[in-house]
Image (cartoon, rainbow, N blue to C red):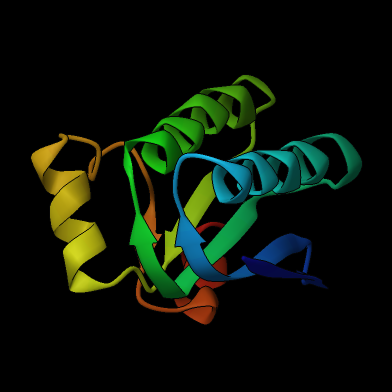
Length: 112
């Protein structure tokens, strides 16, 4: 898994590439979210356009950090998830919990 972090207009943008599944990739993803929560300010946008696969462990990390971000009065925003990941979130009844946008620009415009 590869993560590129950038700061844009008061947002933290995480471009994530690869898979998020049980093991090192889910642990690395959780550590990345933890650092964004503790070290950065503002909402965090996770770009899913290059995520090939996410399993229940990865979904669990997302849900857990969603709660932590909201406790801190911040949002964990998903952009560009594949159709498969969108359907997975819908089946798990999680799609309505996360702000989901088609692009980082759309997310930044809507979440100001």
